[in-house]
Image (tube, each protein chain N blue to C red):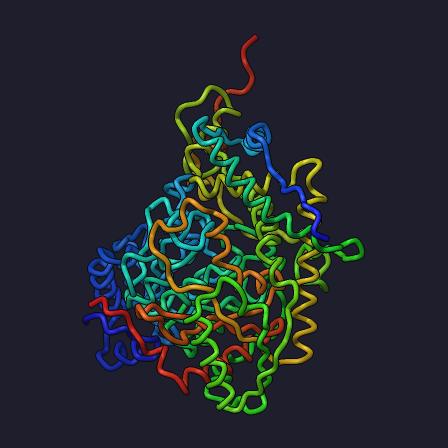
Length: 483
Length: 105
């Protein structure tokens, strides 16, 4: 079976028509990945034997699951029982979790064929997938360029056709920004929609697991599987999970789409702006009503995020001390020195930078000026959205202000890198569901993404709007010229 | 309104202080770089001071209706000691082992 960029439906159909076993699916997936990895490096670590073992187990089950035999890549920060899970960090070297994340249990119960180790920025700290301990992942559309991050491996694996779908995590845009840069669909569900149990924590008030797929129908199918209340995650919400695929192929006549003027100002590539406006006009032609709205505190979102994110991360990463799991340095004098040496040798530079920033903003004398201030501005950003949703049903913006940049281009300038997420961060701060879908290409054929945002727990509106856009455009069918 | 606002900078001593709090050693050759980058980031973050937030309540998470989450205190199956210890860099019996912390007198 050669790489033909299957979506879930097509792959499922092929398995059924050819009567293929999970083992056959695993074998062809492994050989496809082995070939494509030389180009894209979407996996930090890759264990073909583990994958074959999982396939053998699947072949012993009935084939009723809605994801039976379908290869799904899992970001390296989601626990798969006994599978390597390292957050692309040396400090978790060799870590094999003794339990499954809830989303993994759910995928298993539907028969998905799981492939762990999708590459990422170390601990999801980054927008380019360059801070991984395993080295950078490449953008399938241009191998000299970054795929975006932090879920760059998951996205590159889907975009290049290595797998049919993937899970990523999104704290400030880590699913949507790479999805935009690699021309696939990536959704961050509402905060509380998907259990975070077994997701290695970065910023607990912002993190959310979500699907990465070739089209919105696949996104709906995967979202439905992973959603739902989980008593093991005290921030998961007991909210009814709709049949998301019911919202595909519907009419959007009368749907009010808000366009926030603050998302079209400085720093945005003219071609990105142009393609997003083209998309808006297509939605208008399809019957949507376009409303201009204002989200006045947008320009404060990056600052707010770079206080709250690192502050929560510095607390969450305090647990990595060489005692319970992962890497332990072998050169130290006493216990405190063991902690210090382990953390110093185990964390990469960006992780250290975020730990230092977070520790600084939480330290005595600075808490009110930074952390508390940021929490208050977070309230203002949420209020902007509440007011906007009185005027519209969902909001359309660019996902990223630029297309994919060159590997190495922003590595020495963290602030410039942080500004890559200027349009995706607000949804995390406000907890809202948001999706990025392909809406065009620039002059170098690099993909451009359209972001849709909706009120809390209204993923149905995202799916309805995205599906309509897919039906009137051809962008989700574009594939990189890799093979 | 155009009064020059002093940008936050952080000193080398600040970097060393928070690195100690964070249990990280910063290489001498890297201190200047971290100091410059952190000052640059914190300088950017200063823009939040343009906003008057005196009467605004802070948001620690977005699920405003959610208060404490309780469950019944029921005995359930959990990880076995072997599973819990399977990733330990060093173990002895059913314990995580670290270097000696109490010296002989």
